[in-house]
Image (cartoon, rainbow, N blue to C red):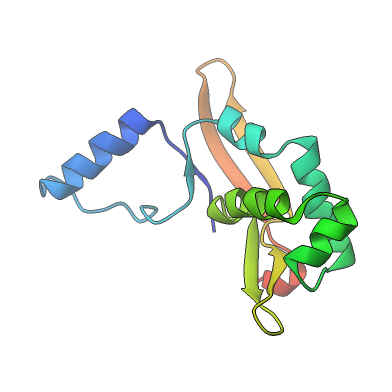
Length: 133
């Protein structure tokens, strides 16, 4: 999986162009996208990075267990996980009964920025070893 940095204006123009038949859908159309690098960084707060580290290190068997490890309320952790799942940083797989087991989907993220032209040149994502293809 790769992250895509694309403004809402660019996304709208791309979607309209595809809908009107002017171009084919781009190969990366299904990728998780962010409006800016800043949007990615707002998601990766120190608190959220701690949550990711706890998932990676402690391997909690449920969201409830993760909440206990973090000493946070379960609804709060569930809400945060929802954002991280939507962004592709976490996966929730079925666990025992109705539980969901959180797993880190992206371990490292590197962003290459052209600082003179304010554009993203590339985004590199490293997956945990068991997720490698």
